Length: 142
Image 1 (cartoon, helix red, strand yellow):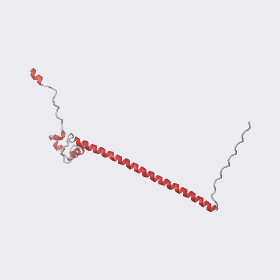
Image 2 (cartoon, helix red, strand yellow):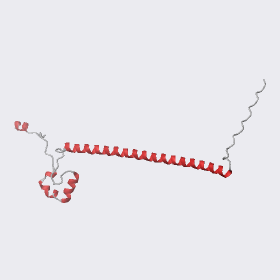
Image 3 (tube, helix red, strand yellow):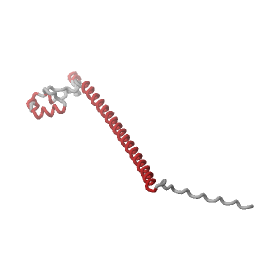
């Protein structure tokens, strides 16, 4: 009796198998439903032909795909940043051209006004008189 008790152990040496619902034969008719298959396909658990995808088996491929997505997102962000920079540079060029045009237009108007005044008055345009210098104070005797 003692020998039989020593050979018996309550703690299992091997872990029990994990339940995998997609491989359960009792649920086969449930998983054949079109709505359920679409949900499984959208979740990435089966492929377009209905075969079960094992995440452990395709872990390397999934990692490569995720890296490609991350690289594509970084590239898209860089392109968007470059587009924003180009757009800003173009707007600044437009603004600079507009300011130059306004300055030239103002210059032409003032030049035209001066010539118009000369023609109307028959003499050069009036210039503002310079203020007279103040006399220097005389030094006080000591």
